[in-house]
Image (tube, rainbow, N blue to C red):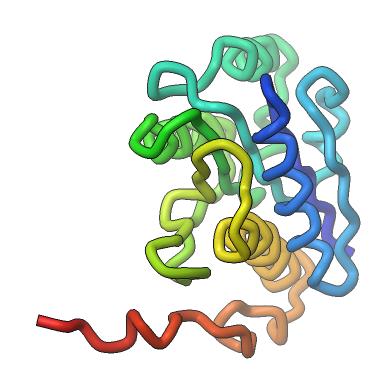
Length: 192
């Protein structure tokens, strides 16, 4: 059984709502155990326990808020690296406006994960017109539309699929073997 940690920080509740949707998506994959925790609740044991992590934070001035950065900085003295190398990770972020730096924040969260030895991934799927999670699920405010909600859920589902495939050796869970719609019809053919 694969273990997924959805770890987040939320100032206004928007990133927490995203985290719930990410966890819901991870729950779509059989035999996955989930923990949904804020950085105020989680500790080193949660990181040791997980096989995969979805890391989320609001975007502050185009990057990671200081509370999230401090949470990871404090782990450096705990010699956590031997327990992290080769686990799977992804990220998600919310901001107050479109173009608020959410993708930059996801990339920074991914770099934090890579520094701890996590293997990170992006998603090529579109979940609605103009909605994808290439660098992670991103959102202006809270997820409202079906496509926005599905982008968060698809991120969690994909994390669980990778954990199931690579950690549990369940090759039937590989994302390419799944039947969900990857590309809406309006994106199949480019119009000139």
